[in-house]
Image (cartoon, rainbow, N blue to C red; front, side, top):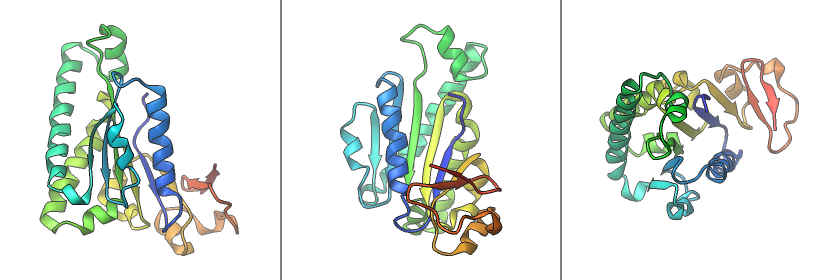
Length: 211
């Protein structure tokens, strides 16, 4: 419960959406709607839209209703502030401590914010609009873990150079077509296997391989 945020990045058809759906599905299966709230921003082809009907889900935002995105992030920012006040009043530093002390009705729920297609989201907005969105997301990244808010993002190969990437501790590189894209992501090319089977990811500066 004290893990940080997750970033999956890679080339086209590399499995980013499958990874995101797997993570979200596991969270839904593990927690009740009272213990987990899910918020989805899907700037892909609508693969996450079915989550709108799940009782855990508070909102699903797509490019077709993009005006809802600033409102959703504003709500999440207000919720983050509320949670910080709850932790301060309980004299605890993290959500796990608050949940241990509180009654079942008073325990804070975990929250997962799933953002699919960070690069498409950026391309759909003006620079000023994206600046505001990035600032709101970066606050969730900086302050969210302590109060139980986790962000899971999928993006293309350009995201390692984005400011948000520096606030995400756990990053997984999915297959990319150009070997130099791995170098840009901080993975040494000499550590790459000649062929990466489907379903594998690389993580860390040494390019450790995972399934």
